[in-house]
Image (cartoon, rainbow, N blue to C red; front, side, top):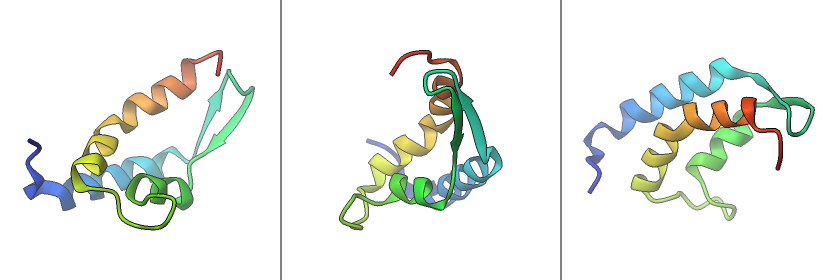
Length: 77
C-alpha cells in the first residue's frame, strides 16, 4: 500500500512540474497540447468534481513525467 504521509509534498511537486510544462508538441495530433489548471484538476478530481482516492492521485502524480514523454513521442492515437 502507498504511504500517504507525503501526499502534500507529492502534490506540490507534481503541480510545480505540471505548471512548468505549459505546452508540448504532439506528433500524433500534429499540434501543441496545453497543460492548464483544468488538466491538473482532472488528476485530482473525477468528472463529478468528487476527489479521486489519494492512492490514485499519487500514482497519477508519479506518472506525469511519463505522460509528457508519451505525448512528445507518440505518433498514433
